[in-house]
Each structure stands twice: as structure tokens, then as C-alpha cells.
Length: 243
Ligand code: PGA
Image (cartoon, rainbow, N blue to C red):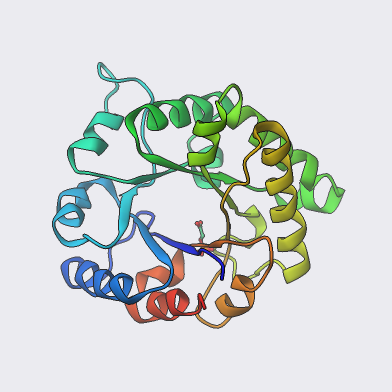
């Protein structure tokens, strides 16, 4: 049996009643075969730490410096203060809309690992790169930059999410073959470099209708879900599709 992880990425959205939402997903997680995670807007961390005892909750970003004059940023120790367990790093929206570089991603991963918070590293190509056929090379470069210099133990803590940019929020899901090709490559690239096989999630227009098929893909260990996680019943169905 596969060991699944399903993480919801709320992005800058709030479910209608977030308290009820957290409680509901927490109950779903208690009964689930999959490990359930939620990356919440950071102001909801205090609420998550009270209500999400069965969930790996955390944030969608962090800054790598420990403290200081970084207006608007959050440190890893602030994440620790609310028992955050995961943090998304290098999401394509952060890379493209906020100018996050490979060096930032690497520094954030190091800071998180030092603080005992699991990084969920997002990688994935644009449509242009996909059409050029250079997507595996592109993802390999993102992985190399992000994980550069980690020890085997550190590398084994990182969850990788393959999120082709062209599939995020578009309703266009990558095909089973496309997902398997890149996720299998991610596993072998990390394995070759560190001697560990990472958990690899797929993200990009995952919903309650396509999740069962995606979970069956041999190289996939779960999903990172954006839009569809905002509805607790849809998210529940996605979680339940991990058999
Ligand atoms: P989506 O987003 O499920 O809405 O495509 C996924 C993500 O950006 O993590």
C-alpha cells in the first residue's frame, strides 16, 4: 500500500467558515489513510494550531533570516511558535509574481530544516518549456538549486511537489503519462544525488473527479490541491481517493 500525503493550499483564500472548515478536515484526517496537510494564510496559524490536531498544517511561505528589518515577512521560529509542521517553498506563484529565486528557495529550505519544519518544495515548468521538450532538464535544475549541499538526512525530509505551471488553476490537468514521467524523474534525480527517494506529490487542477486516477500513478505519493481544497466536501473526496 502506498503512503499518501494530500496537502491543501488555501493560497490567499478563506473558506466561508474557517473554524468549521478546520474542524471538519481535522475529522476527515483522523479517519483517513492519507496524511493530510493544509498550508494556510499565516494569520490563521493560531486557529489551526488549536483545531488541526490530526493535520500537518503550516504556511505557504517563510523568510530565511531569523529576525530583523524584513517588513511583512515571517521567520521559521514564528512558525515553530504555532507548531507549524509544513511550509510550501518555491510555489510558482511566488517565483513568478514575487520574484522568488532559486537561491531564496534554497535558503528557505535550509532554514526550515534547521527548525524542524517540513519543506514542501514546488517545481514545475511553464508551457513554453513544456513545448520545447526541455521540462525534465528544467525540473532537474530547480531540484539541484533547491537541494544543493543538503545531507542525506535533510534531503529525506523534503517533500517535492511537481506542479506544471500550465496546469495550475487552469482546469487542465497533466495526463497520467506526463505526471508519471516527471515524478519518476524527480525520484531518480534525488535518489542519485542523495541516496533517498523523496515523496513526490502532483499539483495542478486536482479535483474530486480526477484524484483517484492520479493517486494510482506509480511515482505519485499524493497531491497538492489548490482550488478544490476550498470546499471541504470536495477536499474530503480527494483525501478519500487515497486507497
Ligand atoms: P490548483 O492549484 O489545484 O488550483 O490548480 C494547485 C497549486 O497551486 O498548488
